[in-house]
Image (cartoon, rainbow, N blue to C red; front, top):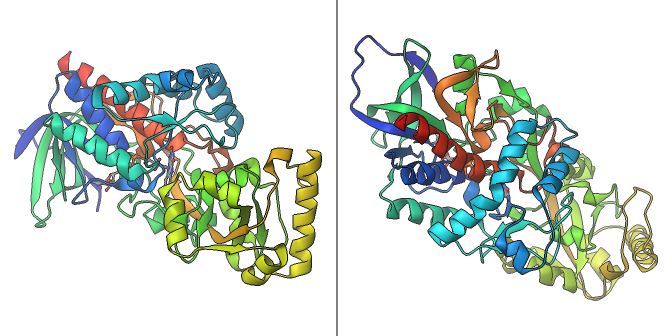
Length: 467
Ligand SMILES: Cc1cc2nc3c(=O)[nH]c(=O)nc-3n(C[C@H](O)[C@H](O)[C@H](O)COP(=O)(O)OP(=O)(O)OC[C@H]3O[C@@H](n4cnc5c(N)ncnc54)[C@H](O)[C@@H]3O)c2cc1C
């Protein structure tokens, strides 16, 4: 059970490292690389046998403006536009200092990983994500977070960074001035070890994997499928509460309204942004699907029986096929294909007349470039042709966006706004840049704050240790 203990006078540790990091996801590994580059030795504690985290479950896409990858494709974008996009989605609730820091450092982060560690990034340029004013999602060839985490782990191992696998940080050991002096770790054989440190970075993500905390902070998703990493049990928030840290936006989360059911495979939102629609089991559309996939999770769960169908065509499927998840869904038989609207309706077991009328109206709006009754704007190039495709999907909780309030270099704040002496948080352990509700999540906010804050905290902690 994660807890805080006070160091005894003359406390002895089994071992000591200058910098200790809890969690070997994208945040922890980026932090470890930055600190090691600055000349500081690091130990990373990881619950699992092999680092994966929610990072491995993601599409691995990082939003960044002004990169050489965007320039090579002639994409015009700027940090100011990204800041505006994030704050528009978050209704201005995101901490401006943190937003500014992560957005300014996102381009350099992607180029750092590409140049220093040979991560072969490219920009997704065949569809745009909801709320993004420019194509700025940078991903690896497989478009998987598994590739991202594996490459980050290989980079850390090449730099002789110590990753202690199957080692769970359990108790934070606090010194007389409230500083962190070490961590008690539970090892794979259930043995306990006390590791002393000069600074600590919490990179152990949020509380999606802790049903009690979800019931407390995000009750509307308490019965939803949790699609993130089960080992993210809210330890940072539990420690933070005991330490008197400022906790922020605990009701915020990233949901997703398009997870194939019963297969539990993510279906890219590209199917919607390219012109697909969602219909419920009564054959009806129910809202403007393009607001964002995060808030759509709760909308989908509100529909009869808690599921809906994504409907699209072969052109759209071809775009979605760049994602390994979509190809896996095809292999699993999750995608229904039919030559006519009526045959598709029969395969989906939805009322043919209702669905046909919805489909006809949408295709007419596309031809005319019109706006529907929900305010969704359609375009001519989004027209769909047979054969038609459908996949049954549900809404899921991906990860929480609330957490420890931090300053722009990732130092954890106390309730009075001052910062702890040597405690940092990055990624899902820290409050994100998505405001207070699910609708505030702009695509990419998760890995943006994981990778960039990881690097920033690694640098800041190293500077402090060396000063
Ligand atoms: C299906 C899915 C798709 C997504 N797609 C995207 C996307 O394309 N773009 C995007 O920006 N975001 C995406 N996200 C969100 C993104 O994955 C997360 O925001 C990001 O990976 C968080 O990184 P992290 O390093 O903070 O956490 P994680 O990657 O979850 O790493 C945290 C690590 O800490 C370890 N840990 C936890 N507690 C302890 C402890 N006490 N002791 C030791 N170790 C511990 C865990 O085992 C885990 O390995 C997606 C999320 C999901 C679930």
